[in-house]
Image 1 (cartoon, protein in one colour):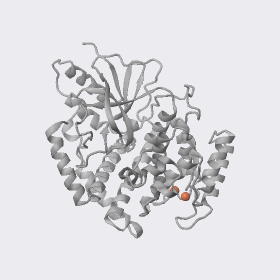
Image 2 (cartoon, rainbow, N blue to C red):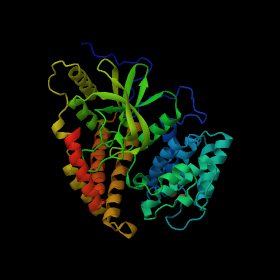
Image 3 (tube, rainbow, N blue to C red):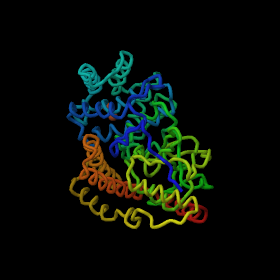
Image 4 (tube, rainbow, N blue to C red):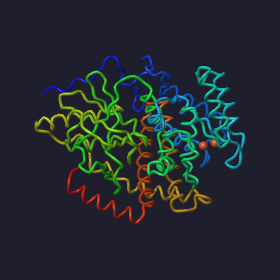
Length: 446
Ligand SMILES: [Fe+2]
Ligand SMILES: [Fe+2]
């Protein structure tokens, strides 16, 4: 059989990790205008250049990314909020701090920085957007709530991250319905515990605001229980795990670049190897799973993506494309040769875990983080810092194979450290429930 022709003359194949799907040249259909990955990275660079506290464990860049991830979810719940402002707020709001202690004017200084970068051309906001950003930044440290949907989403995305310093957020201090509904839920605790990729955050914001048909794709039938299971640890997800994707003309694209914890194509390759059917799925996007993938409640299958459909995995990597062709033949019932990817080594990260322990010890941790959970949290944060650094380097120099290799290794170590944190933070009751679920899961379906 002839493989599907996936070449699209209107889209450059693009460098790995950076090929922006929506593209900067398409007109926005959103009333707020699209913030592209490029524009967002430029803003991040500018903020980093002007921030002395970006290395802070509590208020630094890693906190900014967690606020951005929470902001993305709040924007999904509140279409009237302006995602561009919510994303910029996350990057700016603590960037002008002079210390991690009492610093009552850090919001006003952040607003000054925003004005400065607008004047220098690093930001391109209209007057109304600049005024909204200024108000959100200036007042974010004053303990208020706001009826403005954009400012409310900004402040709630920061407040939901209070878990990181051992404070439980209160619904009465939240400004938005989305923020109030998150308080007290398990997934609210994810934002300060999970660690996020800027590239994924930016691409998700871009997809949230941009035109095009965004779809959820899933390999394999929906679990009867309604809960997916993540193979690397024993906790069930809160719903059904799916891949974020796009339908571009006749092509279905699985976009692993939008996995919030960093690009991950190893798992896709395993799923292709299993020859599972591929479906377009709909449901309520309620949070994220263990790979930073969307998790849906009330998921249902819309249609099957057949071997005759055009399918791509982003970023486009030649060996993954070979795996897709292998899957295509298997789904068609044709005889297949050896799988073009060495599966036996792909999910091993034991040695990375040992190195993670070394990094933790080298940190000499203490203070509010001097607990098993706190130490594990910092361990993860140190990994993400590496992943984010390599992603930024790749963004500037996509053809640098050495950096890509280091980024992948850092990604493995990050996922290993994250799994360890989840294991450590479980209660005995959770472990028992997970065992029951795991047993049920093994009996029913993969
Ligand atoms: Fe702040
Ligand atoms: Fe903050």
